[in-house]
Length: 263
Ligand code: PEP
Ligand code: MN
Image (cartoon, rainbow, N blue to C red; front, side, top):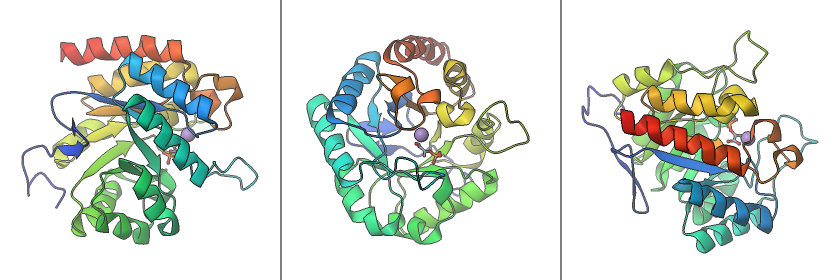
């Protein structure tokens, strides 16, 4: 169902009044985790001013260690809703399991399925039963084919509103957190009609190098970017080492716009 052989023309995912996968590039920006009202609302205002069309922020966080910050959970969803109301930015947040799907779906415009859950087939089927747009992230060691098959699970249940997201894969390289697979962008664009996003933050995991990967993603033909931005990255409760501050984000957005216009 997700193959271009079945549907040759690009699919547009409608999120509010945004057309994702259309002519315009979309940038979803915000912190890895929602931490406080002040943090999420100030970030929402800053990213909107710099040109982001949506806000991101994790409430239910899938952390590698059980001793790390797990997110504000329900309180995080409520803060995200406040930031959405205050700025008019649509939001995306991760749905970690089927138990919290209903609560997350109520507070988000896009359901983010994280890399660690790309092959959680019960979750894929459950989000496939909803009619909410889904941002499906590539698994940490998943092939392009496996990503497409995971999307197939969602679409097969009737939810056609799926955006794919390349977020870096695990390789032998350990200077960077992951290896952003830029190859996946033109490959996916050729294989599927679904929109393709890139997460340069998790893809490289090095703050100073994130803007270069934002530019590269757009140059390679991505339909949009999801990027981590925090008011004070060194003090972030998660992923500060890969989060841009407001001025870094604003500068990177200018560069991204220039590349998008040149294409
Ligand atoms: C995130 O977006 O903060 C996240 C946890 O991403 P991923 O699932 O790609 O690791
Ligand atoms: Mn993160």
